Amino acid sequence: MMEYLIGECNYGGKLQDDWDKKILKSILKRFINKEIIFCQDYSLNENDKTYFLPVRYDYKDFIQCIKSLPPNPHPEVYGLNKNAGVMRNLSISNKLLDALLNIFGENVYNKLKTSDHYVYNIAENILLKMPDSFDTEEILNQFSTNNNECLVSVLFQELLAFTYLQDVVKSSLTDLLNAIKGLTVLTPDLEDILTSLGSSLVPKVWQKCSYSSLKPLGSYISDLIERINLFQKWFSFGKPKDFWISGFYFPHSFMSAVKQDFARKNKISVLELTFDYEILKTKRAENYPDVGAFLYGIHLLGARWDEIKQSLEEEFPMVMYEELPLLWVKPCLKNELKGERKYTCPLYRTTERKDILKIHLEEKNIKEIYLHLNSARSYSSRKS
Image (cartoon, rainbow, N blue to C red; front, side):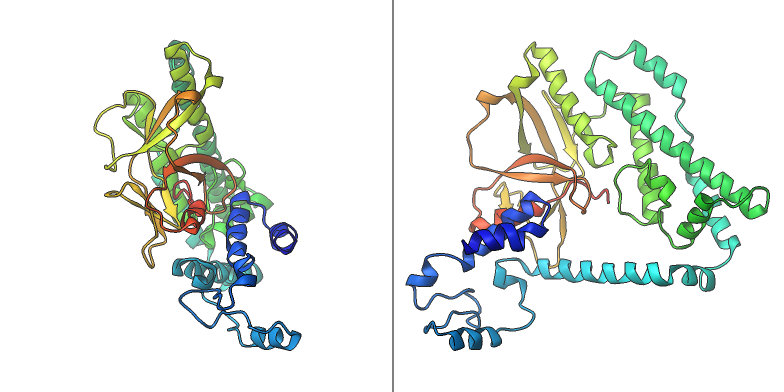
């Protein structure tokens, strides 16, 4: 009853992510189990004897025990790595800074950063850095003559999405420059762009048609240019040997296309297929895969990949994110999937952890069940 009330109603009711709920339930099992009742010297934390249950079960004994507990317990008490505490503190700090920016943002912008000349230079530099937009007619002609593979459809979809985003960025910056010059009226949207650029934030107008990203303005522009160049090379020189999965606008479409191309080639139903995954001992591909696709740009949080043991291991202290080696995604029949002991790892697009893809990682050599549950906090690409 207690486990259900806490795990599902109290704390669990505030969690939206199913993987966070799994972590919570795993933590609760450390504190709510039969050993607490039948083992008199049961310790809530093996490495810290501060956390114990009173031998006597009187009300005053429990109150005294609760009062003796530290007000700010360290992450190890819950079976978490020290990095979890660092991440918590960073999250609290970021929320505080965001709140201060919301309160004093306009004043900071007006007093410290500036002038219209400052924002004018930023907008002008972004326009100079932005590559040429894709030729939509050329894309359509190319697609109409070469659409045998589903991956070509994915490329077409990505090119159109980035073309639209490019046009929005360029046109809005051009309008802003004209407004600063006094040639046009400063509309509410342009005023938002003006304030955002002065605060090094991505304008809301861009976010509405953008891929998921939590990056500040400078990193966002660099990331956008890198993504555009990636698909420009694919369009100009053909399919790459490996794919930067974090750079896709629609990663789900890419994964579906890999499966559909395999189904067409082997003349089987796509409903009979699933994915098998193999982590290689290299960062980038030298050759094309026999089947499926090679993916890079995936990062782990809450765990690391041991290339020697070929398994998930506990993360190193103060190393928050670690890049996963090249991931080989292999379509296969569901009834042929190897029955090895693997861990289903969620793959998120950003650190907000909203959209999920699932991959399976080897979990052999993991010493405690909580480690691989904690690695459920692994994310997709540092796209954010």
